[in-house]
Length: 492
Image (cartoon, rainbow, N blue to C red; front, side, top):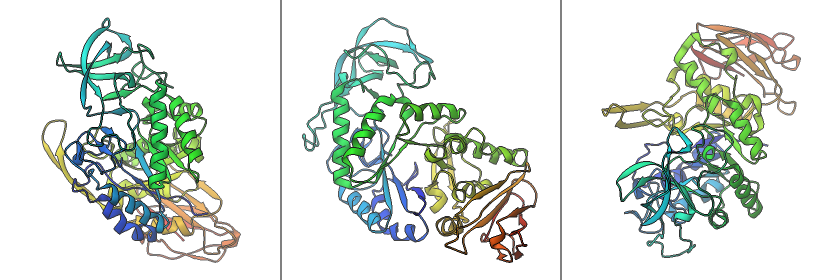
């Protein structure tokens, strides 16, 4: 069975020209030839900012670029027809498609409503700082451009737990909506900010059974229309595990195939929080290994002061490897974004070797690492910054190695603070399989490692071309494998 190699097929600053779906269709054969067999696509439906929306300001889940809403028919990425074609072409080329879904909140409401709220302390959302009072807020979604096609469900204030803007008094804040489902927030698995149910916009009320049924209906509709292979669920940290369990069980039931469901639970410091969420959802979702990304980010900043023997400490891939989606960067961590923490360029080949050529986790590559990226945006200081993100050239060699020879038992040689390595022994059915990886975040390094007696006498070379010499394995299948300073070599 081929290992899954996932590519995040977008970044935050992808052009707003409606070209992404067509580009995906054009590039699908090349992606598959290079070793990509799954793509994570951005939110495919209409956001509040229409054709400019990255997709996380969810407006209408049923508008996949079909209706004239929010100033545009197409989404930032293209039309409904182009989306469906891109998915079909991916499937024709053996590439699974994982769709991004934002259930936590909705934005861009069509009408104001009068509703009763209580204001809470933003730093401790469990503490009320006002008595109940009435405001006007944007909480009613009627989707006039769609006219009831696919669904006639109307979202109103009973569908939401909180809002951040009181329109009539021109005041922002965090307001809990007082309704028949409760005066406060839903139960979560950790207590950051007291309760981090509220993230942004109009926060969805999952205690309302009509809301849950509408989201399940949408999941069935979307799967039957697109034949997607799974979902990436945004901001699950801010959603009760109960809705995740209920919704995932439903879509797995209505899908004719096993779906890959990935949750974004962003806690970089405490892997126990991720484990707690996995326990609460009974392993129904896999999670991005946010702590691993943070380790990569810190290691790239510290250089040879980082002890590489601890690169997997406090990570999901170490604790629950079969449910870990490993990553180097993503759209939130790229420069000038909300969670900005980009891994330095020199360390990216090392980091990608650590997620692509080991046996645990499903690796997720980031679009700029594969294609490069260039954009301009404002920083926190209000000044414009021009950003260039270079391709990681080593991926051209690593991806085929992952797909074709990175098999067999794994043995780690994590015995030096700056130079570590591991081997994969290969499998009996393929005599050319197996490899040795050695990397250094300091000076030139080497590591004695053994692949096993079955490889005795074999000649090995560095497929990344960093070290030109050939190595001959001894009677135990061992040798000193070398790498350059601040680099990685992969010997096959």
